[in-house]
Length: 267
Length: 264
Image 1 (tube, rainbow over the protein chains, first blue to last red):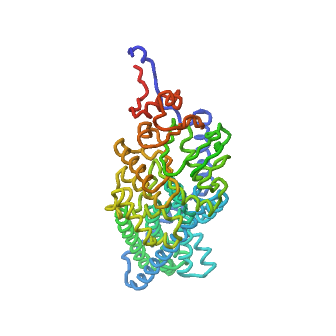
Image 2 (image 1 turned 90 degrees about the vertical axis):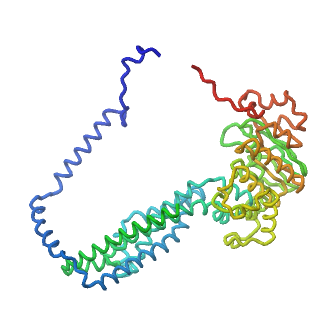
């Protein structure tokens, strides 16, 4: 190639959206919406300023944290851990059949649609909203928390497990079919071993998530340390509340470290 | 005895892949099916055990019509047809013994399958066959830890565990190096004789087809255009099978496939 032929060639990265009218139109629309959103919500600087002393009051009352009622703290804590463990165990088991029903490659299309719809429903509400419903239904306490986190676990684990099932090596399924294995035995030999590492990883990850979530759902009355925390706030026991928060943060750190180690050990 | 009559397979609205095939395979023989890729070799084999649904025609195994079977009947018929795959299709994360015993899944119940409690006679047979192919020391090794040749031997043993009345092998050596491939072909020929088993092998290496089979079937565009003893496959017949597909022809002769010519 001669040098002359390459001269005058200018290159620019092609834009992500080719149509310039659309490209600038989107920017304009986003800017206009933000301007409207900011102007329409009353953001009162006065209220923010007034908030500082109140925050100072809360933190002033919170320091030093008060661990005197450690027994109450501990029992709330143990209940949270129980809620998380039971919900994870039950939820992970229940998520297996639902995952199969919502994996496109192993069930007929109508079943798949129904399965996916169930998973999406289980996922559509934040656990706090689900907890409010269960507290109304079965009353205050750990049971509501367990039911909430079971729903949460099913939604998360069955979706990701279904995706893992959809990605399996199909040759193994064909080999089992060719041997005359029926549907359940094909699932047992050709599908289960391929998704098992993923399922164990998901279960551990979900346990991690549930330990955190179990502290949150307690705030709306679903038992555990969250309920203890809410009571402390209600009685203006900011120093005890601060002690609880420190304990929750320690728990989250601990689970992060432990589950990380276990997952590394497995893979 | 396998008898195929007027077998047609069409995917969607396209041209049929198999256009009215007639083929019968007698007892205890190795039959090699050759032809360039797209000729319909794999579809033919998969129609026999119904991994692919035939569009029309008849396939009979020892008198039983296979094309109309459904559900349990179909699974019972599949037990009688062993299959060896190009990609081995082993249960990668399970042990060699589990892979081999999986060949019995059509016979054992769900609970024994789940708990891996197979009848002792199945375990004995599995161990015997693994010894026969030199893999007895690997019973508790995971399948994904074996070499290619070892994996395909597990694949063959698994198929034999079904106590099949016919063995189908779909390009069983295509993923292996030439020396290992010879070993697998040798093994299948010997087993065919030992177990009085008809074997139908899809293969693209014509040299291997000639040295390990008693009969060669040449497929082109979904039709059988050659059917005879290996000695009868002369250059003229070879050219008819691979006409217009020089790359496949070169590969079939065991020559290294040439890359596309690079123009400066």
